[in-house]
Length: 109
Image 1 (spheres, rainbow, N blue to C red):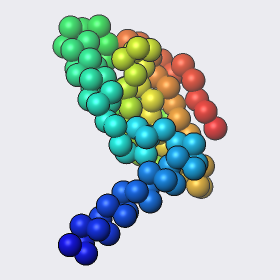
Image 2: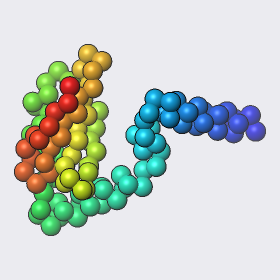
Image 3: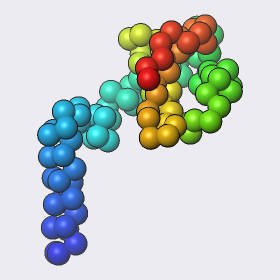
Image 4: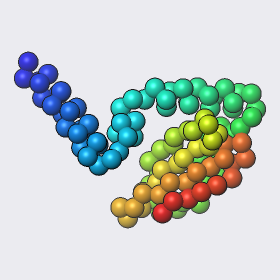
């Protein structure tokens, strides 16, 4: 019983911190339904030949981010773009890539 209580206390603490920091629940690791539907959409578009695979996008972008640690991708089906997340020297950088062309369309610093 004590473990269950501490488990729920941990979840509540994480949600509280996320809300205080102004982080959306999905970015805090909760509410992944939209992410799942976006992943399915990405696969469907890739199979139809309408966009590049994530592996191809990573093959093109990762060499341009030398010295940064790659943290992972997210896909936005509305924009048909991947957002690749990197960290270097404690700073997070997002690289937005057009999934159809593989072209970098934005880079936040």
